[in-house]
Image (cartoon, rainbow, N blue to C red; front, side, top):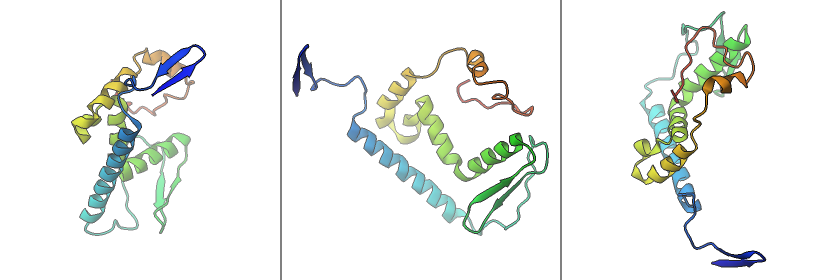
Length: 161
């Protein structure tokens, strides 16, 4: 298809610089959703009995008692003494419930989806790797503010390093 404009003609039949078409993106999204549903269904089916209503877990990295109470609808309510503890508990709870999804997002962001979903994602992985941040991470952290990197003495986990 060719569109005429005042400056000349634009040829839209040539391949795009982006290696994934809209149809391929929809197929990929459906595949990711199906994998997620399958994993979450298997996780639900593999559980012999529901977790006890009160479960105590001791986790390093908290400065005070922190509670995550899941109500009868499955909604977690987090009670913490400090903001750091609240965010730590929120991250712990999210990882407990959706670690498979977080790992899939990590693979997507690093251009490693083909390793999980198959070679049909290799073109998208190549494109994603072209956009990976390669700058100075210390300068990047400094731009976020003084308490952004605060980690309560816990080592930071970084998939990029």
